[in-house]
Image (cartoon, rainbow, N blue to C red; front, top):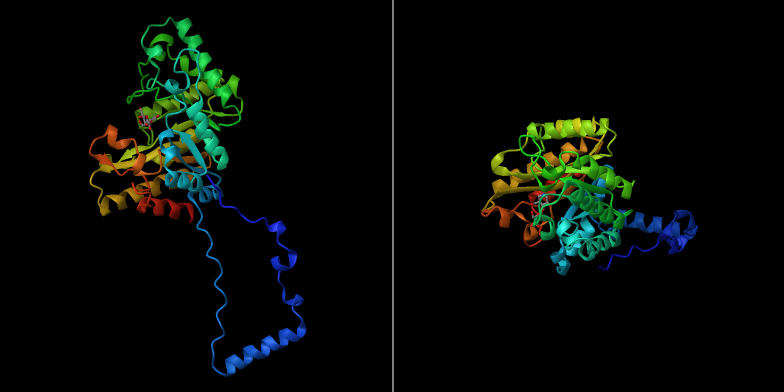
Length: 372
Ligand code: 9MR
C-alpha cells in the first residue's frame, strides 16, 4: 500500500521553517503597519490570512495511543484484494489480528508440514503499516485440520503433537507478535472445562503445558487465555479468574486475559465490565478486548445504531479506566466482512463501519471517548 509521505522537516530550509518578525527588514515592517492602519481608517477589513491547512483528523489508533493503548481490527486474507478496505485497515488502526490465518488448519494442514503463507501476508501488511499483531490462536477445539481430529491419540502422542505445533508457530513469529491467544475458549458457560480433544486426552494440565511451551519459544510475547461471554462478572469469568490465579500461583507463564466481547443488543449490555477487567488486572495479568463486535437483529434502525454506539463507547470507556487493559480489537472493522450474518442469520450490522466502508454512529462514539 502506498503510504502518505510526510515531508522530512529537517530538509526544509531553516528560514522558511521559522519565519520570524525579526528577519523582516524594518522598513517593510513600517510600511506593512502603515498599510494596515490605512485599511482600518478606511473601514476596510484586513484581508483574511490564508486558511491554515486543515489538520488531518486523528485515527482511532492514534487516539488510543495517547492513552497508551492500541485500537485495532482483525482481518482475513480474502479481504486483501479490496483496496479501499486495506487503505482504512492500514491507516485507521494501530493493531491487527489475523482472523483465521494463524489457526491450526491453516498453519499445519498436514502433520509436521507448516504453511505460513496466509499469516505471513497479514504480518507483512501490519509491519508495513507499523501495526502491532496479536497471534490468534494456538490451541482451540475449532478449525483443526482433519489429520488431527479424524483419529485417536494417546496422551503422549497428542502432547508431542501439541508441543511441536505450538513451538513451531511461536518460533516462526518470534519478535513479530505482541500477544498469543495460547488457549482459546477452554471453558463452558458454567465455568467447567470444555470437553475438547485436548482436555479429554490430556486433562486440564494441557493449558499450563501449552503456556509453558509457548513461553519457551518466545519469552517476550505475552501469553493469553481468551474467551467469549466473559465481559462481565459471572460463572464463566469467575472460573477464568480462579484458573489464572491458580496458574500464576503455580508459576505458569500466563500474562493476559483476552475478553472477546461478542455482544448482541437483544441480550443487554453486560454488567460490571470495568469491575471485571479490574479484577483480572488485580491478579497481575493484562487484559485485552480481543474480538469486539455488537450485533443486532436486522434491519438496523437509527435507534438500534444509536444504542450500539453507546455500547461501543461504554466498552471503550471501561478499558480506558483500567491501566492494565492494553487495547481493543474489533473483529474486523466493517459490516462488509463480518462473520455474524453467516453464523447468526438475520443478525448483523455489528461493526463501526457499514458495508460501504462508511463510518457509523459507533465509529464517532468511539472516537469521542478516545478524545477525538
Ligand atoms: O472470524 C472467524 C470466521 O471467519 C470463522 O469462520 C470462524 C470459525 O469459527 O471463526 C471466526 O473467528 C472466531 C475466533 O477465531 C474465536 N472467537 C469467535 C470468532 C467468531 O466465530
